[in-house]
Length: 262
Image 1 (cartoon, rainbow, N blue to C red):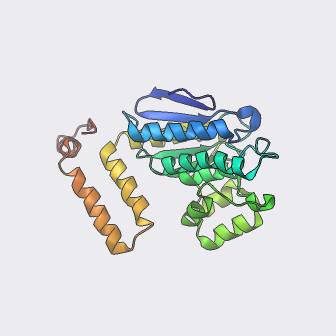
Image 2: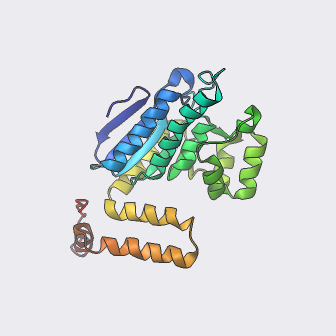
Image 3: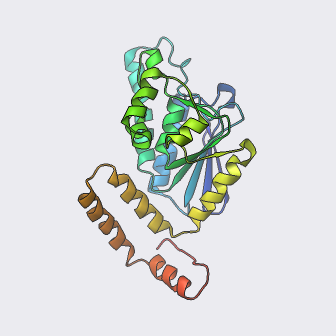
């Protein structure tokens, strides 16, 4: 698929890099980007093809994503605002349902909806100097792209309240210490590091990766026993697969496994 606000690079085997492509606006999310993100995640959900890992990053060196394009929302009525936001809601739900692992490569400031995209990814690496914030309460609104749900799952409720109540920006070092990102990289090493990790993921059994993602996501809504039952259901679905046979045979034959997603 081709998009006006997203740059798609599928030149690497089994890995797709999605770049938010509005650098002149610090990659702020306008209505068109909302539609593009929704259509992208929905397409991957319906037809993941050979995609085994996705990297999400921002164009240029000014920002990962500055959040919502507030110039577009100036002087619009409530009905129009809600209509625009409904598309973003669809995009976030589609991202949540994406079966393929998503790594956020945060190349600069990630504010508002930008941070919410980071939080909705499976995990994130950030460049030195990247900053983060959920400043919505300074504007009379609140996070509306799963921020109040994903942030406390990453850093705990008390820290999430501090971040949302104050709207204050925080550093990559703080984001790492609080569990919001996984690694800090030099700016020139950010994408290579993300790609290196993506290649490791893409080299593993894709059906197993997708089942693990599903089970870990489910663990956040279940008690331990119910979660374990869910894990076992996901585990048992892998047993009849050709990939399971290939993985065990490759191990015993001391060779690299060739997974077919079957």
